[in-house]
Each structure stands twice: as structure tokens, then as C-alpha cells.
Amino acid sequence: MSLIPESLNFDEARLDKIGAIQEAGVPLYPAKFDRKDTIDEIKVRFHAIEHEKSEESVTTAGRIFTVRNHGKTIFADLGDESGRVQLYIRKNDLGEEQFDFINRNIERGDIIGVTGHVFRTKVGEITIWVDQVTLLCKSVCALPEKLHGLKDIEKRYRQRYVDLIVNEESREVFRARSRVISLIRRYLDERNFLEFETPILQPVYGGANARPFTTYHNFLEQKFFLRIAPELYLKRLVVGGFEKVFEVARNFRNEDIDTRHNPEFSMVEIYEAYKDFRDMMQLTEGIISHLVQALHGKYDIVYGSETLRFEPPFRKLSMEDAVREIAGVDIHAHTPDELRKIAKDNRIEDYEKPNTQREFLVLFFEGMVEEKLVQPTFVYDFPVENSPLAKKHREKPGFTERFELFINGMEIANGFSELNDPLDQLARFEDQDAKRRAGDVEAQMIDSDFITALGFGMPPTGGVGLGIDRLVMLLTNRDSIKEVILFPQMKPEAVKPDVVVEEVKNEGI
RNA sequence: GGGCUUGUAGCUUAGUUCGGUAGAGCGACAGACUCUUAAUCUGUAGGUCAAGGGUUCAAAUCCCUUCAGGCCCGCCA
Image (tube, rainbow, N blue to C red; front, side, top):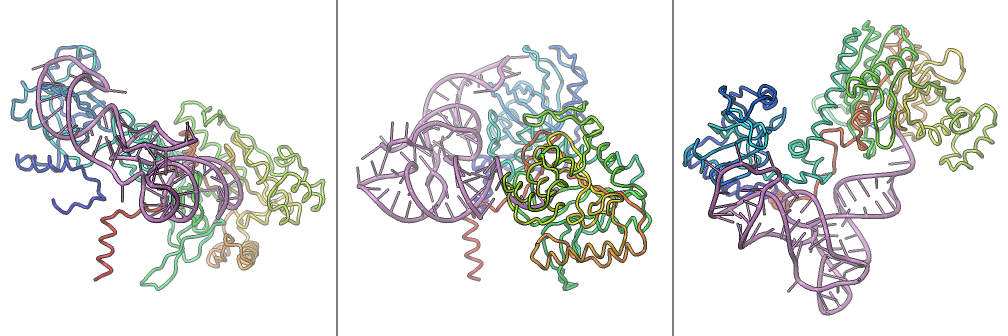
């Protein structure tokens, strides 16, 4: 017990109690406890209990959150995942020796099991009148204070376990997150989609425009990329004959971190044979409105200062119409030079780069329209140049059958009629590759095997990817992605003194 | 990458404008208390004021550098 690193933040007083408990021969960390009732079950079963103690006894377990010591009695609040309940412990019932032991060595933060009878106190609170206390886990770290809990945002992210212990609101967010994922799975399962797991370690990355993480396989002596999207593998499955597939996928992108971006994030990608981008819009709308309904019981939800309305159908408009309507620019009515002047007048950055009407369309859309799309809005028909995996539009030359869903100015979903023409796909990849060679770090690599797969023939297919983290942000009214990711990526903390000593020693060896 | 901003005891914080011995509540520790619930009451300990440097008789406070966080912008999903 003499070599506990200071960086662990173990509490001296609690470590002293460990010694006392050991001396008393009481197990500090027993392996199992036969819990018969959860706290919520007890509260439900005894909701009508009066002041008189129940005949029936209960056995439950949990963490101690507050202790009110009255000398010969103790009131404490015990909490498990289902809720909290008050305990009433008396010296008369336990005997002097056991009562004093508990008084001295068991405290806030410890996990205990109790057996007792249920009653209602004078002031009306359902309480367990405790006959027996079993220590199940001695906590050696002090919990944050009971009034204010843990507020420090940084600490909440770095020590999420503490955040979860003391902040019910935080637990609520992650319950919702778990629910969102299982609801998505069930929704797709009910429609006979099959979920598959495709490689995260990929020799060639693709499926999105982004910078990848790289890693190295020692045995193969080969460089690998962490996937930026599962897209190209899921489409190989459609080639293989699975007609309705999806993956709840963790993707990795080596880019900046901010309130909307974490280096690893979750998407669900869905592909369905014999469907097109319009069908996928409908599917997306179905899933999202279903989630809103399931979590909130209605289609309207509050997000920040906005009320978002998810009653289908969502608004749908082409990118040209969106730019005409919201930015007030009719792309087709102007020459590129005129468009450049309009862009400059509107103070859009990078107004010098585009050269064609379609390139300006994207510029105006991203510069003036996106952020204004607060209510759920599908925007469709994207220029071919920045949609290398989408099928060319059946009616509009130079465009693709692609859509994105925007909510609160954020891109939430991205889908298209999948490109299944292998020669066209080759040409698009070559175009991407040329951009990459010209210095575009986010342009895609040529995935020859994927083109070969398309060479065997993929049916007409609709596909869509939904950003789960952002969806959860909307559904739980959080303004940072870190609030909906359990362990968001953070820079390492300043090195603690005792760790420094360790490192210096190692250098000497 | 740019701008603004925050960092004081285990936790929540006052003090920074205008430099003068670092203060509180909760928690901990010692004690009183048999229906309390932010329990109450008495007492005690606990701080290299994020780190380093500078100015000054004197720095938590002013200046510089660094580290970590937050917000906004750029890039992306």
C-alpha cells in the first residue's frame, strides 16, 4: 500500500478505511451478491405502503449517494440503474459492533447490498428499514459533491464514468443513443435488411472524400487504412446477391476535431437493390421520423432555440431550386464570370476557384444555403464532379441522382442511386485520382477490385448513409458531438509528476 | 489553421476591474444527535492559485511563453 501513484487520485482517508476493513476480516470486493429486487421494482411493488413496515423483505444493491448520520441511526440514499431509494439503518437493529463498523468504514460512493423491510417515513418517503448490510465494493476515489455534481466539461469527457455516476442527464443521453441504434436495427430488420460487418482495416480506402488514418500490419508487412466509409464493401455484397444490406459502422477520419466532428464516428449505411435515390429519401424519412416518434412520442422536438418538425414528408428540393430560392441566385441565368461577381459580392470565400455553372452551384449552396436549412430538408441532384459514386442523372446532364438531408444546417444523411456502370466508375475514379495527384488530400483512390466487382454486375441500387452521432445530438438537444460520444477523443492531459519520474527512469535503463 | 475565452482545495466556487498574508459551501477528519432527506450543531486539517519566465519592495491579480478545455470561423459527416 506504500507505492500507490499519486496520479490515480486515490483518497487517503478511504485507503485508511481499506486497512480497517481488512483487519476486521470483512471482504472488500466479494465476487457476487444475490440481488433479489431492483430499486425501481421495490418502489413499484410498495408504492402504497404506509408507515407500518412490510411483512415481506427485500434484498437490493447499489451505490451510496448521500449519508445522513444521526448518531444511533443513519439515513442514506442508495442508487442503482433503475433509481434511488432511501435506507434507514438503526443501531438497535444491527447491534453496536456492526453499526459502528458501518458508521466508520462505509461511506458515500461505496457499493453495498442490503436486506430489510419497506416502510414509509413520517414525511412520506418510501424507505428500506435495513436488517443487514453487505459491503460489495469499497470505493477509494472520492465522488464529486452532492449539490453541484460534476460540472467541469473537460472532466466529464475525460472521466465519463464519474459523469455517468453523478449526472442523470448524461445517463439519459446515452440511454437515448443506445435506443436510437437499436431502433434503427429493428426498423431495418423488420424490413428484411441483413446487417453485415465489413473491413475496418482496408488496403485501399474509399466511399467518401476524407483523409484516412494509416496503420501497419507486421506480418503482411503492409500499410492499411482505417476505413473512412463502409460503402465500397457493402456494394460488393449487393454484387454478391444480398439485396438489402446495412452496417452500423464506425468510421475514422483524420481531420479536425470540433463540436460536430470526432475522429471516429458512427454511421448506418444502407443499400437496397432495384431502388433509386428517391426510394432512399423515403426510407431515410421513415427511419428518422420513426426515431423522433419513438423517443419523443410526437413529431416536433425542441433543439436549442428551434422547434424541428419531423412529420413526413420532409421538404424536398433540387440543389438548383435551393440556391435560387434561398440564395436568390439562378445559376442558369448567368455566365460563370457573372456568378463569380455575385459570389464575391456575397463574400463567399474561394469565389475564385469555380469555373463552371455547376461548380458555382455547389459554392453558393455550401456558402449561402446549407446553414439556413433548419427544418429537415432533402436537397437532391448534385453535380457529377463531387459525386464520384453516384449514378448520372437520368434527365439532367452533368448531374447525379444524389441527395443529402439537412437538419439545423447539419448534413445528416447522404444517399444516391448507386453508380453501377463499371466504365463510368473507372472514369470517375480516374478523375478523383487526378485531383489527388494535383494535391487534393481528400480525393479518393482507385479501387480496382471494386470496379471489377461492378464488372460482374450490380443491380440498380439505392444507398444512403445516416450520421448517427448527429442524429443523437438532435434527438437529445445537445450542441456538441462530445456530449453524445461516450469517450470523445481528447488531447492527453499534462503529464503528472510521478509519471515523469517513471519515464526518466526508463530512459536510464 | 485564425479569433474570443476559461483554468483557484477532492467537488462547486469568491477574490483578477484598481497588485498588499488565498475565503466559503459541500466533502474529509474528531465529536454531539434514534423519522432525516442540500439533515443540523461544534471543532480540525487540506491550496507550488494549470506550468514556466518576466515586471515590482510585493503577483492568483499586470506582461510574455507553453499546456489543456470551451465557444465561434475555416475544413469535413
